[in-house]
Length: 135
Image (cartoon, rainbow, N blue to C red; front, side, top):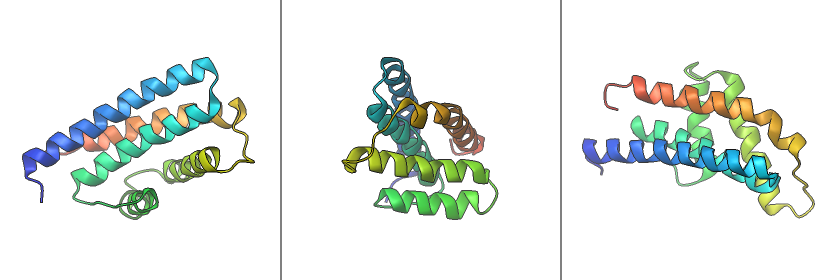
């Protein structure tokens, strides 16, 4: 069991890691590495969603578990817009197929339209985290 201080430190670390990973993503996009861009974009969002869940005392052991808890506690309750919940699930699918499906080709057409949604996702979730009195 984490102390409040440990949980806060871990939440802050995940937010920082999310933002650092997003900066990596932007550089990878500039270089045109679309598989890597999809992967890092997903992980930037994953770290931020994980931080939010941790802040509120939720944990999951799998990526699908994180997505499920995120949907259950934040999207279905209206805290996070449904468009961002759908985006996060779609981004997970793109990352999965890009990483593990030998037949999937990830191109700029797959990645570039997601950039504004990723920015909105990260900003929205970070804002929710920062509104808490604990963080």
